[in-house]
Length: 272
Image (tube, rainbow, N blue to C red; front, side):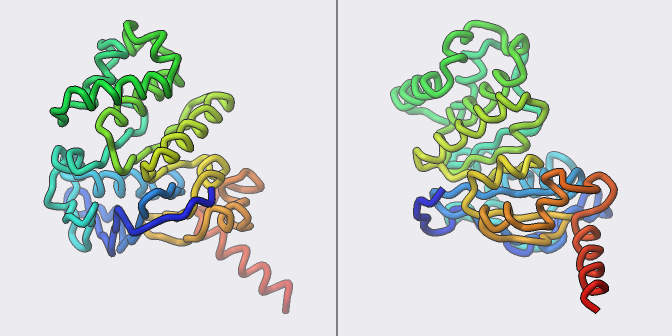
């Protein structure tokens, strides 16, 4: 994607986060998302990706965590002081890992619940129709209990519910997790379409190919620290990223940082 971008809508600066006052989950993390761009956040299990999203969205304290240092600014406001509800009202919505839909409610009820902070009924109705146009399958199933939908359809419900909040910034936590390749392609295209309407996206993914192919920029998080950043194209072409995330080698037996250090040592030895 090559569309021009503007000023930062989200700025995370030197954030340190802990759980239960002892487990250090984020170590001086900095990141920004500019207006109109998709930013990918890569990292293995336990890297701190979900913790970072919780810090941004105001949900960290709900999960027993706290920010010990640093700042989070969203649309010029101190996000750490907003709290979850005011953060949504300010224009941020999150699709959590595992979808977290209301299984007993219908598709229609799930979608409408996403607009709980809004009071303009006409605008909500218009957005509801836009969501159904974006997800024709949901229009067909809107009277069905969401828990009976396929995994891909449930992910569409989760994304559609978030869009009902009319977000300026959409946080997506592993939207391709557990989905068939064909459905992953659909989700990828949906993210592109959403971004094309002007919504900025922070995309947390382990599927690096999908994430980086649609992102202007990307970050790599490892053990709570940022270890690499660059444009989506640069990271997609990076040999370390290819080795660790794109299945070219021993992805399951080493950390990204350790893999990178080992390769550098090997290259130095061969050069000497």
